[in-house]
Amino acid sequence: MTTAEILTEVRDSALHVTFNRPEARNAMTWEMYQGLAEAAARVDDNESLRVLVLRGAGGRAFVAGTDIAQFRGFTGENGVAYEKRIDEVLSALASVAKPVVAVIDGHCVGGGLGIAACADVRIASPGASFSVPIAKTLGNTLSASTLRRLVRAFGEPRVASMLLTARRVDAKEALASGFLTSVEEDLDTAAGRTIASITSGAPLTQWSIKENLRRLNSSEPVDDSDVVAAVYGSEDFAAAVESFLAKKPMEWRGR
Image (cartoon, rainbow, N blue to C red; front, side, top):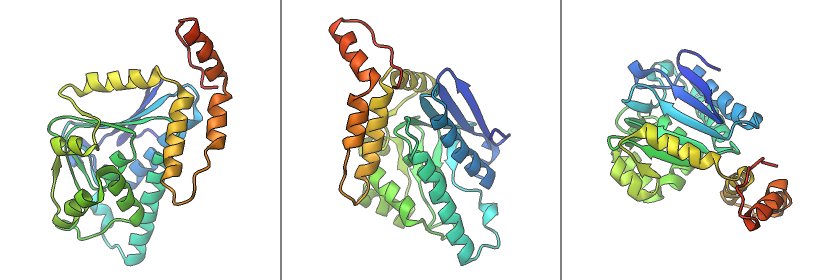
């Protein structure tokens, strides 16, 4: 889905998604959430796409949560349905088999932080900030699934303080916590460098790491034999061994 509010563009082997409501700090509408879910499916369905890149328009915000006007008239049942839908969209994003990069300029708030937490690599401008100020704004809550994502990304003590006191984390603290990969003055150059690094790598290695990380997040014992077999039994692995020994560059095919 490409609309005025969520833009998708293929550049080389990257699918770029831009949240495009700068006048509303890119607050998410239902249609934008749907567009994000469709983009997640699209990048996995297309073999030529190697990376999904997420960014907000306007320079003031990545995503400033969900558009509050959409909550008018909500009941408890509506709240359950809403959190379930958010869980579905975030799960779809977190389940993308290819690397996901979030390029964060400005505020990353509420649902925007949930989206960013689903990325594998997060780079931000020095002025970026991160918060879920619901204890001082709407008085709503987060689903356990979304809360778990934030805890994995930031750590439980920091998430507790962010939510209970509605405090804002700046880029320096987010970098120190491990949530951010880097803080960059020139986000365009940094994003291009990150995309190039990903697309020059082995697709099956990247898939295997993402898949086993996903499995490790389960409470069940991890059987990774199928993942290991798929990688070591691949055409790419056999060709890469020969290329390495022959000191020749490797052209990855993802097979």
